[in-house]
Image (cartoon, rainbow, N blue to C red; front, side, top):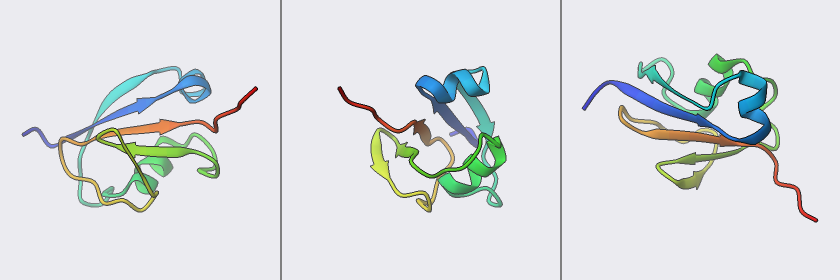
Length: 78
């Protein structure tokens, strides 16, 4: 398996970053969802939902090469 992470951004996060999905190199120094978010430099993590391989997880979820990591903005209802 390639030593990459597939990173997905949804809704306003996609607009903020200017991209929807990217493959990033997986390195042991960036091995949690929080560390990837910090590397992306998209603002505070507060209120952002995180999914790894389509399951909601906490920000300190350890990642492995080949994982799909998704960041979702706060949900609003109406």
